Image (cartoon, rainbow, N blue to C red; front, side):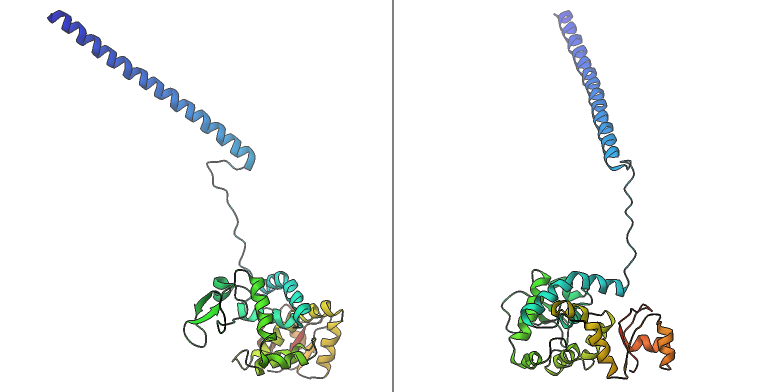
Amino acid sequence: MKYAFKILLLLLVFSAFSCGSKKKVAGKKEVKKEQRIEDQTRIVVEEITGVPSEEPEVVETPAPKTYVDKVAAYIKLYAPIAQEEMALYKIPASITLAQGILESGAGEGELTLKANNHFGIKCHGWSGGGVYHDDDRPQECFRKYNHPKYSYRDHSLFLTERKRYAGLFDLDIDDYVGWAKGLKAAGYATDRKYPDKLISIIERYQLYKYDGEVLGKDMVAYAERNQAHSNERYVVKQGDTLYSIAKRYDLTVEQLKKYNNLRDNAIGIGQILYVTP
């Protein structure tokens, strides 16, 4: 009986050892199988991307844009919308774009990023969503839109549906100077330099050309005629530089840049520059 028990015990130990060995072998086979799948996947990834999977793909971050680049990108994106609003509501596209650039920080202002609000329109008489933002007073309510195009449309409605802006629509639609001054007079903004800022943006970036496209008119000629009646402005011509213009009016380049809110020395033919403060 004792002898039989010993044999049974030995058989059990041997069986346990054999099972453990088989598990180890199976484990090695599984590891090899996984490694093979991983290698094949890596090869496929490398063939598709051209980048070894062990090395992260390096994506170059573009250099920060200058303010002029940001404005140019803004104009390219929103000029068609401003022109459509001009055709529908008789508001100069140049004025709409200039207000959008100024009020939204060329699309990168906090209010614009949070609420798609490009014109700083507050929540008065508004039943839609809103966000709170510091302005004349802390945490004022501003309108929130699902898309920038709704901000542009609300801007058109805001001007056309309020009696205090009615006088603007008696002006010629290509009179961006009159519109800029009229907006301030009607109370759109409290900044006393608001008209000058709008006019400077319009003339620096030649936004009046977008009015001309809608009206089928040569607005560059209009801008030159406008300048001819004022010794405070100069229309940039072929070969002009900021230095040559500044010298003509006994100014420094820095003074000329300050008068026109210029961030760099880039100017274009047909651009209007202020030559007095």
